[in-house]
Image (cartoon, rainbow, N blue to C red; front, side):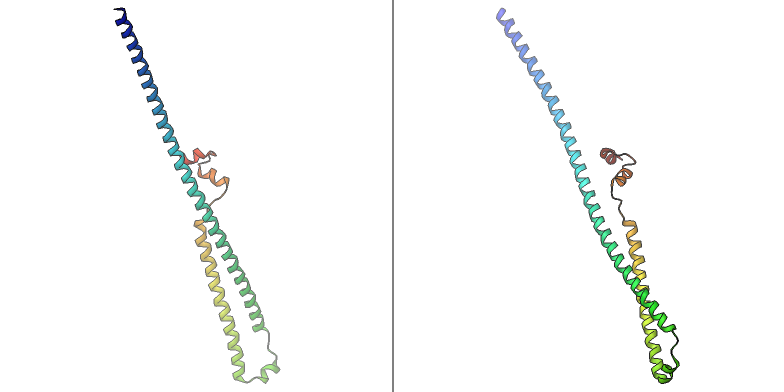
Amino acid sequence: MFWKKYRDNEQVKKAIAILEGTERNKQIQQTMKQLQEQISERTQEVLQLREELEAARAGQKEAASARSQLRKMQQEVDQLKRQLRTAEETSQQPQEVEDLEEMSADQQREVHEKTRGVLRSVMEKFQELEGRVAQTESEDAPNRMEVGSAAWVRRAGGKTSTAAMHRG
């Protein structure tokens, strides 16, 4: 009898130890599952941030290219304005009577046509460039990306933490 009680007592202790081990394993598995979910969430956040960073870099490159094109067009416009002013000043200067008298009527018409042609081509180029500048500015306006810490804070709804940004 003593041995039977002893053996039953040992079996109970073993059963309790097994149950405790099973419970610990369940807790460990649950903790592992939670950690895996957190890792997955963080991985998604990192991927999203990486995509946003790449988009911001691409946006910066596009903006720099657009600014460069805009500067070039503005320089061309300025050059055409100078040419136009010069041509206007030249056309408004009174011709000396001696020069006009020496030219035949055909030569005078030819000079006037050349002057008008130059003025017309300069004006056309000028208008074309102004149109391109306006178009570039209007196309660039909605694509501008805010860069820097202020943009991150605004995008996060005024919150400065990265986690707040992703929640908002």
